View 1 (tube, rainbow, N blue to C red):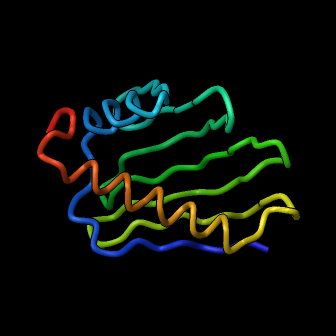
View 2: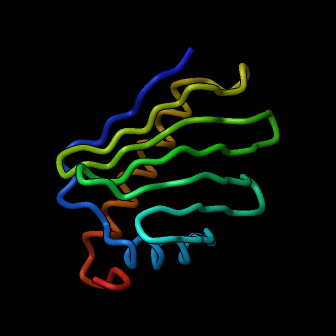
Length: 121
């Protein structure tokens, strides 16, 4: 069964350049073409997906591969809220733990984006 994690009060959507520079700090590779692209990270966890800038924000799909299996989901960043929907997770990964990690990741991402030292801001 899936679930969604929400993060309220997103001040703005990152630009493509900000997204690219922030991705580099996490070892994530972006390949883009106009308003959409793909991303990938090797190692543990291995992550891959695709994203697209739309008139309402940034949307995408991803899969993460961990020792216990795969986590599959989607994300959407709008000017007021970010959401991550998990549609599949390994049975042995507790939902509460995964929700906590996603919430921490979203908070860290938007905190870095808001910093005056954010690359490309």
